[in-house]
Amino acid sequence: MNQPANGIAVMPTTPLKSDNGWPASKDPAEIGIKSYPVKGTKIKLRCAEKVAPLLTGFAAEFHEKIEPIDEGTLDDWGYCFRNIRNRERLSNHSSGTAIDLNATKHPLGAENTFTPEKTLLVLQLAAKYGLKSGITYKQRKDPMHFEICLTPKQAKERIIALGLEQ
Image (cartoon, rainbow, N blue to C red; front, side, top):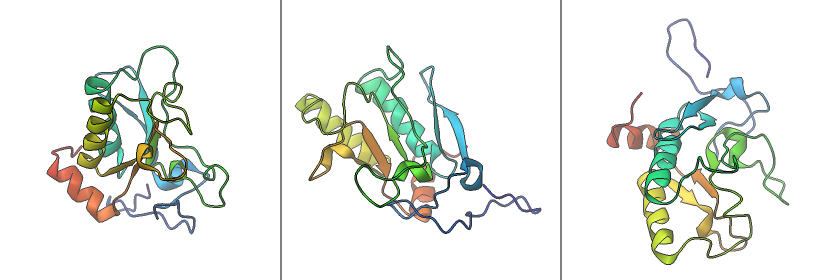
């Protein structure tokens, strides 16, 4: 994140945008990507500073209420500069506004990897944190995937409403 002399963070000026409209960059520092611990786990997720409380808060509740995310294979991640698979648009991972949890248990293209009860809870948690779940994708399901579906202003408001200010 750019830190001018007055100490107020400003949005980067990168012309690249991920699919959800957030600034994207090959240089993670340019868009404020850092590693953030997920409460109650041994893992950290790389994500954008402006949405870290939402993504890590969601991941912590997912770990607590859905299934552990820090056992077995390390298959949980966030920032990665790349296109959406088989598309010409930048993935939301490119802006640090998306995470994948338990990717080996919930692979791309798979359906019904959660029980119906857990599916409902996953969707409720995603909505709480202002996320869209890949479970809801129409064409190709992506049950490991969770992405911010808020503007920067809405994300800030959601963080405050949930008491997640850092």
